[in-house]
Length: 290
Image 1 (cartoon, helix red, strand yellow):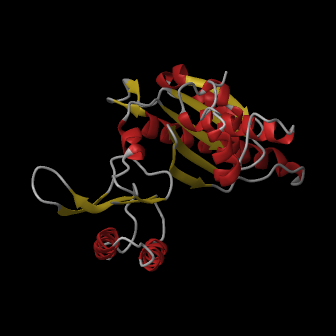
Image 2 (image 1 turned 45 degrees about the vertical axis):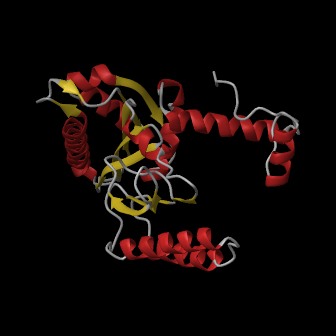
Image 3 (image 1 turned 180 degrees about the horizontal axis):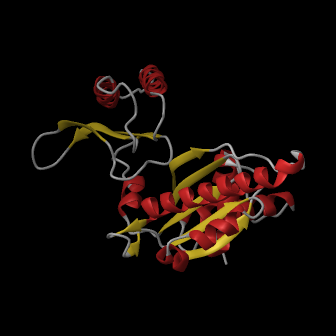
């Protein structure tokens, strides 16, 4: 049974190339019945994949295989766009369909809103579970502060401040559009994080809708704009993002690399080392991170 998950923006041709490679590898399966079953499933998956010119906005889930039940085995072939964005590529050929990632998308997970505001751009994004979604990118050209102009310098300064204030108001309006629900009566996110440089982030925080002000859980300073700044904002606000799986995974990886750098025997990597540790009775996973 083949499970194929493609995240948003994943090149369909890369997935097709992966299936071609697997078709070549399947010729080495010794048992005739298994080899024919796998080759039939791969051929059906290739045909189903040709129906898509590009990956849908939420990604693509494809399941192909021989289903057995009370009746005789029949080939099941289905492809659909998941209700929530798929976060990673997965290809699995196993005795069952792997739906763990899709089940996780359907679970009730808190969603957090992010606004990364800088002098030349602004990014609106949401984070739920392991899914990070960019909602909108906004570009702007604000005049720089300077001491030139002679008697016109005060006028230039006034125009600069007016454009800056208009930019902050625009971002506040878009924040209401993305993160308010039910006619502005409630927020659509469990919390809101504002990130940025200089005083822009503080000016935006004071200009938000009252409902969003109540949801503001952290304001952080970042050194970069755009999606790079978004990554920094998620990392810097991790202590305020309770229940977000992505943050828990990042902490776990951080702990793993910390133990690895210290030469600790509590962690291992590599196929041979991991199998040896499991055979010796090692426990899979890690204790809850605090």
